[in-house]
Image (cartoon, rainbow, N blue to C red; front, side):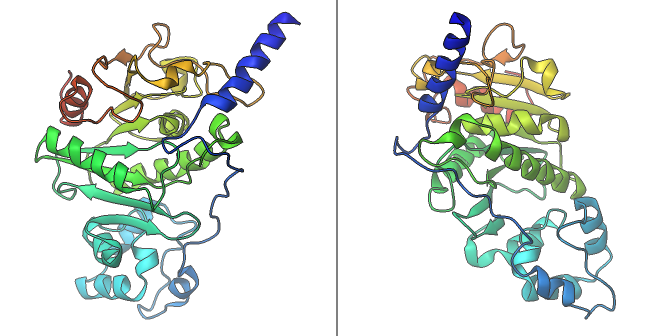
Length: 325
């Protein structure tokens, strides 16, 4: 009974402590936008090409890429003009065409969906010609309104890594908001993992290099759940509450797994347990987990792993550029 009480206590503490980056306000369980992409009905009804367009809900990124490869430039641009919400969010569509479709939302926007709190992905660097590709997967309290923080981290990583590296700032899933059950459970991470896996399939379908995933806070839960469904070259977690795995072997990935945790990060107060669906498991920086631990002694806080001048960003840049720090 004593052990049960201790485990239950740590589970409750996890609920209270696995906080977001924007405060400690209470929050209810977030809803995940479902259903087809906006504009799907008009897209599927479009018979101007004399054949069916790929169903956004069922077509794989490889099938989408093959479809667009068989079109003329005029046909591609017309689809982007007539159906921007579909073309701009459909993995497998050529990168430049997604930029074109998403132009009203900003420069080099790879995806944008305004439903709910909004999801968005934007690129720092030249993605189409990159020798190396990285994806930043943020943690809680990140959405279309607060996306600038993630975009800045992508810009800082890309600047540190060099011109042949492109970095995608990917706020492509519904993140937990404030304090609530979503922070301590895997519900939103599971939905995010499916989206992240599809993103990496889309990169592969576009002929781009296998990406390195940089996963912050709750984003490391997303990356842990997506690990065996991506072709990631590296998975880097920082400020992680756990990856829902006991060790690297349990992730089911061939990627090299790296982990960083600052001694000044409040995440260290979060119990590393998983019990009755609460908590996210082992600390990725612990010796038994099997990840390569990166330096983080000069990182001043939970949100500062990408701060220019830190040893952590230098290590991240080396990984993003295909090196081994």
